[in-house]
Structures are given as C-alpha cells and as structure tokens.
Length: 241
Ligand code: PXP
Image 1 (cartoon, helix red, strand yellow):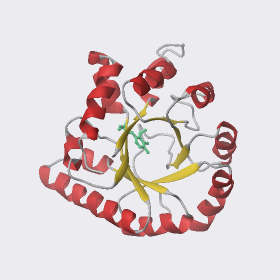
Image 2 (image 1 turned 60 degrees about the vertical axis):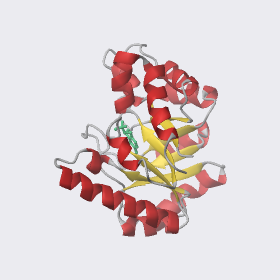
Image 3 (image 1 turned 135 degrees about the vertical axis):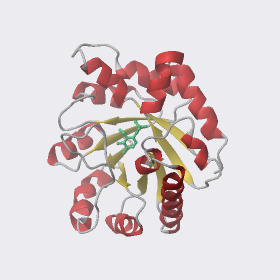
Image 4 (image 1 turned 30 degrees about the vertical axis):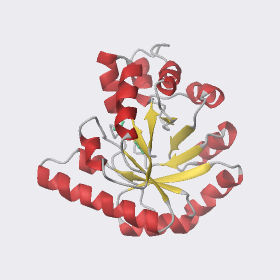
C-alpha cells in the first residue's frame, strides 16, 4: 500500500518568521505520526531558512516512524547525514533564491560523482532517493548511481496552467513511474500535491510514498494538523498497491 510521508518544513518556516521557538516542527511531526503519517520529512537547507540543525537532531532521536532528510549533495550535508543517520536521504537540487525546490536533479554526467557521494551513506545503512523529473534518461542515470528510490517531481503537473498541460504532465509522470519500476527502482512522488490533484493517482499502482507538506500544513491552519494528516492518509489508503 502506498503511504503518506509528511514534510514539516512549513511549520519551521512560520517559526523562523519570528526567529523564535513556536510553532515547533517537532510537535507537528509527532502529531502527524499519531494521525497516520508513515514517515516525516525535513529539508535542511544550506541557508537554514526553515529547518534548523537542532530540529534534525531532535527528530532523529524522537521520530517513531521513519525520518527522511532532503538535502543538497554538499560536503556539509554528507557529514550531517552520517552523524544523524536518517532512514533515508533524498538528494535535491538547491538554489539560494528559489521559493521552493523548482525541479529535479540533473543526474546526467554526474553519475560517478553521485555514486561516490552516496557510497558512505549506503555503507552507514541509510537508504537514498534522488529527486528527479519524469525523464527516462534521469531514471537510467538513477539506476547507474545505485539509489534504491527515486522521487518523481510532480511540481510541473501541480502547477499546470490548463487541463491539457496537466494531462500532459500527468502522462509524463505515469510513464516515469512505469520506467522506474521496470528498472527495479522504488518510486515516490512529491511536490505540489494536494487534496484535489492527488486523486489523479487514484488508479496508479506501484508508488511507495507520497511526500506532501504545503497542502497539509495549509489545511492544518483551519482543521488542526491531526485532521489534516488524517484526511490525506485516508485518501492515499484507498490507492492501489
Ligand atoms: N519532495 C521534495 C523533494 C520537496 O523538495 C518538497 C518540498 O519541500 C516536497 C516533496 C513537498 O512539496 P509540498 O510542500 O509542495 O507538498
């Protein structure tokens, strides 16, 4: 069965708006777990604009499901991953000025470098995922790098300006899912998924995890985080294996 993993970065964004102590992403993570999240995700950015090192350290000690760390492939993050030992690291591209992650990694031509980068991480028993666009060449490169998972970027689909564009982007994702599974990868989806567009995947088999943050936290403002997580987990539970 596909599962929901909840990204709590946006709770940290609100806290950092005042550079204070509330709301605490740890509370959000623990409530999300109680409400049916099967994993917690944080993105520790180089500029520390939301999640802080303290958050990651404490989550690594207290998350009861699985902790996934999104990070750029830098030396600093390599050391942090080895120190905190999340269940999985997901390598993402990172630009200083972007509002959020804008697209997938470009793996092509970087296969050797990324394979070496991940070697110690794999050695430490940490799984790896690569956040990529639904591009067949990226999927081939992901296999070469030796990642167990890919996360296919659903942001272009979520941001589509017309039904036609949405349908085209959806087809690319579905094809990418098929190629990834055929290549022996485990496939996750994430970015921009919400309580409406998620239903486009209601008949898609083979997805391991849906990685969702913003729409859940947006709903949580009105319904509370437990209800918002439960609502999404209940939807995903109805999707095929
Ligand atoms: N997956 C990746 C790799 C991301 O960078 C993000 C955003 O932090 C997400 C999933 C979640 O996206 P959203 O917050 O739009 O649900």
